[in-house]
Length: 277
Length: 329
Image (tube, rainbow over the protein chains, first blue to last red):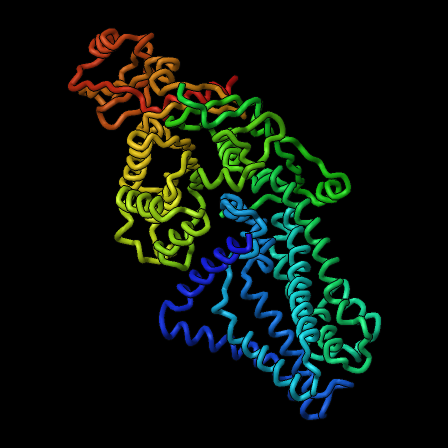
């Protein structure tokens, strides 16, 4: 099962390389613009932290760690392909049919479709390097246990965002045209946080780690892993826990929706219709 | 009949459709109390297709053609009845089943849009787990049959519609599928490309004994394939047989073109005047009810004939009459 999944990732990587490496100019421009775009987004909070020496109880290196963590999460998620971002479009436009005629389990097709590792390696590299730098500056005791917890949290943050996008994208099973763009709207909603959320009112903070879990994509895991002031002892397990809960919700919704899709198909008779290409 | 590879028994499929008003009050009423109607796409379809058969699946718009292809491609589940293909249930055994079939939807493409055509084939080899020797053999065959070499390295988005369809068909052939489902594969193609595609499909069936099930609105295309024709009407099979049988059942419909010395078309008993171009007048008639010699004698008695020709009515006219009959009934 894992070997087959890796084989499909390999096929996706090959297709990605073919697209990126069409011309030398294209390859350079593509890599550079992506890098500048993401590093530019990190710059403003870092400059604020440097100007004041800290943001709240977060020293500069901790702010850098949080932003680098967020960059790593989003780059891995981006590399994993289009499906979470475009699920509602795929359903609404009847493109799920293309997946269903492939002799692969649907989960594997969704996981590996549009795998683009060459698009996002610069941002991932930037994220990993900056995390390493900030951990060194903060004198964090890096043990195998801590690294394991970092890995679990990174995976959990990726899973949280994926599950959130899938849960919203599933709406398109019931309203194919009305909810065709809901995935991209949901991805705007759950954007990365640029500043630590400690100063945010408690009620809003609760929303940002539950209903719209932007806080779980970098702020809460970073605070827990770095033991920033205010972090609880068990906070490092909150994101994995949320990932399980949200993942279960998304899975249930997706299965219900898929059952409906099997019954209605991408037919022009279904409510609100499916756009025909 | 050869071993059955497709079996539909009592298949029903219907869809619920929401009715909408165009007025403001109607829209508000629909919000409060939505109105729905049921559209029945298939009503108790029974169909068996043997290995190596070529079946043309035709019918007017909304007859249920595409629904049947989707059921057979594992994309839809029937409301009632059973669908079996290659001895399996296409929905329950989807992963194994779709690896043994090829599907082409004429209005969609399986090609990677921004990639060279060749890349889509290597991708398919991986995803479909096609062994090297089968891939080499089937790719060589498909490339030659459909003439892909001139645009093999071009991006899919740069292809003309005809090239795209040839590439899509070739893609479906890689891996040597046991059944080929083609949903409107000639839609929008020019005459020459259409002929190439149809010839390729015919060759696949004739020389490779591939089972082919094809839907199209284009009756001359389907007749050209010399396929068994299954005609659907409002979700039921209205005719299942050969084109010759269909023509016999519909009568010996023919056309008579007479050129006279006058632009006025003579009235011929038992023949319907279709139109005139200058002094050439065209008529439709049923040669079983109105034998040709009698009709010619009537024409000669009413006008001075310069030239005469007669030929069978195009199959699309035969079918159009049939559809009109169905609508009338």
